[in-house]
Every structure is written in C-alpha cells, then in structure tokens.
Amino acid sequence: MMTLILAAAAVTAPDPGEVRTFSDWTVGCDNGLACEAIALLPETAEWSEWVTMSLRRGAAPGDAAVATLQNIDADPVALLADGRPLDVRLEEHVDGHTIIASDPEAFIATLQQAQMLEARGADGATVGRISLAGATAAMLYLDDRQHRVGTVTALVRPGSGPVSSVPPAPALPVVTLSPGPGGEAPIALSDARIEALRREAGCTIEEVGGPDHHDAVAIASGTTLVLLACGSGAYNVTS
Image (cartoon, rainbow, N blue to C red):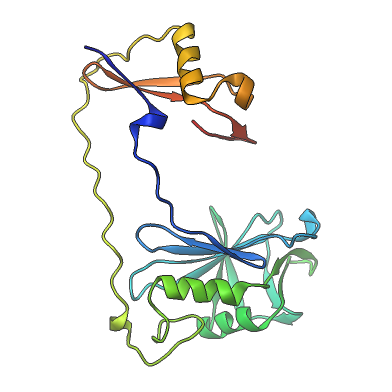
C-alpha cells in the first residue's frame, strides 16, 4: 500500500511563541527561550533613511546580548546616539555589522535613554538611522521571558540576584529521523493529482497566484512527502 502525505497535514498545528511589539521595536523568543528584539522602521519614515537593528540573547544564564546593524548599503564606521558619538566599533559579519561596545552596560543604558541611533560612514555621511522608541519595553520583555529581572544579568531592571539564579535554557526537543527508504523513488504524481492536492489544501494557483511547482520526496518505503508551493512574498516561497 502506498501512502501520500501532504505537508500541510503531516504535522501537528504549530505553536509559535508570542511576538510582542512596543512602538518601533518587536521581540520574540523561540522554544529554547533564545530571544531577539528588532528595531522596525518608524511608520511614517522614508525607507532610504532608516535601517534595522537586532538585539539577540541566548537563554543560558551567562549569555550576553549581541547588537547588530542590518540592511545597510554602505559600511558604517561610527555610531551616534542623539548626535553624541558612542565608544563602539563595528565588525562586519554575514548578517550585518555587530556593535562591539567598550562598555556594554553603558551601551545598553544608552539604548534606554536616547531617542535615535545614527550610523555614519567613513566620509561622515549618515548611512542609516535606528528608532529607539519602544527599545526599553522590548528589552524588559526579553528579560522577563528569560527570567532575568532582578538579577545582575538583566538589561533593564537589574538587581542583586546572581547569575546562578537565572534558570538554565529549556531543553530543546529531539527529533529522531526514521531510516530512509534506501533510494526508493517517490510516488509518481500526474498533473491531475497535483491539481487535486492543491484543491484539497486550498492552494490552487488561482487562489495564491503561484509559483506553480512542487517537490516530492520518498521518506519511507511506500511513503512520499509532497510540498506544494503555495504563494510567495518577493523571493520567500511558502509550501
């Protein structure tokens, strides 16, 4: 007996963590309580003037917060808060420019006190601005989710609680893969069968606009997993 599994029905309903937005910042955590706060573009801003910034922190008690500037066309060499130069350096990485502060606690305090960050290039010209409206609330939410409030590790409301009082990161689930089908080919699917699967999944091209392609993978003997492309935003395709 051959089994055909449509991807949308092959998994249980997802249970994503809550994403909270505070003015121009949004923050969320994964199921291991690693969290990321991201600066959004102000609602009325010109896209060319503003860039994004992320503040990431792992859930382990000793994990530090890492700030990164993203989506900057030119290389920034300086960072200012409300026009005042900050004692930081910027290291380029694949996902942006990491902000390395000489005094990390002072830098976090600046994010709570200032209204705006400004990145400048080598010629002194502004290459991007970051709104700090909501940054404090976003960091406090991050602290709360990671049970850091009142400890020496908190970003916003530190206290006397030692690092050891922060609970360890939750254990991540372990996914066990069953043995593969040993080179077995996926079930052959006709155009009519694909169209029927699209109607079943509520993913016809007329409804989602494309792209019109699918992938079929044998995941066990006699069992094929089918992924139907079901719309896209720019280059991001959902299946």
